[in-house]
Length: 525
Picture 1 (cartoon, rainbow, N blue to C red):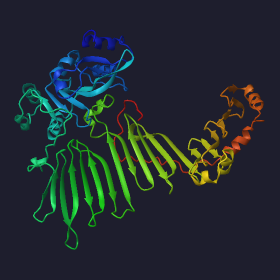
Picture 2: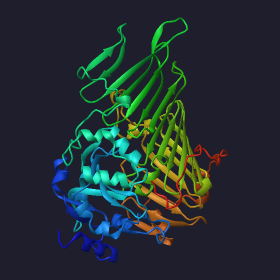
Picture 3: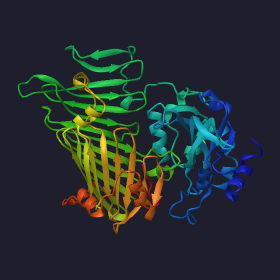
Picture 4: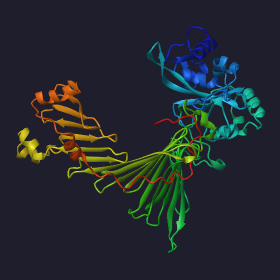
């Protein structure tokens, strides 16, 4: 590394740093290596450096602005080398979080997230390194620390720095840390540990891998060497018999799963939660199997480079939501200032017959709607797509007999299941602006393409050799290719004609009041 990190930051800010290269921060300190990280450099992106220094009052709507003190950025390598605390990430197994004893301009403790064995770029070449993925002032710092302690996430802490930091933040250092010596490695970041359970309940006093039983022999708790715990709850049926009604499993990384059972043992519901207690998946059933509904959620982790602005709102913001029943699927994706919400319906063969979505903007105003209907043949090949913008896309396939004759398939080939029913003969695309494109395919693998403008003129022809012809020469080339006279625009239009779907998307807001962000530019998945 040439020069100091302070000098490299100045080059980034002035635009003098090499485009797309990541910026070396420092060599990975011994403390971080002792925790389990690899050797080598710690790097960060130029974009994140600019985000760290951007001020709220001058940043544009599309910029992140962490507004960190310049002296913190200048001394970032020193803060990484001597943190107040090091915590395991509750959301990324390959990452840790350093708590510094410095605060931002809003008096929030500044944290630094590091990823082990990441990828950087130096002089245009990819390199292996450790990556600083985010650094910012942490909101709700007390609950953040307490939650990490609850999950046994403390890897290292400096007693003096930590105590000064939490006292200045307005709360006391949790008493559980008193059992650890200061300035020692408590554990490596990649070790599997048993989280501290509520009310100090620990189901492994007699050794791991044992099941604790009630006097009647029914289990009530279990724990194993991987840090998994499970409790059992019972209820009484109408006839007075006791049955297992609920199990609660807790995993070493803080995740949990709650399962509800009916009297006959059928699963009625499953709820999974992440390490921060947020629901990530739900399943419900009538216990018979006729009615089942499952919903999965994905949240912003609050630590990644793109989402770190919303770290203090990580309990509110979704990345996506999926809902599924036997014949329908709904999906909602939440981005910075938009929400995309989609629906899918399927037929009894599992083919998607309808796909539609809304895009919501500020205050959940509908910005765009779209709907596509699909048609299939007896072999489940897609033969038509019709969208709400006026586009019609039709596909014609060779019949099985034609394909068999061409390739000289005999009866044994056919009985053996030779796939001779999905060879495309032509594709006709009629676009919303009136243009039409016809692609023709032959069984020998050659193809041609003929494009018409919206006013009915041939504007492009691509022959079997891949040569393109435009304007007046397109029709001449088509005729010369021995294909014959090209079909007229009217003939092609008639062949692609299909009714526009009558049922357009329902613009009723369906995001159940979930936030969609507040204005920093949308980002696709």
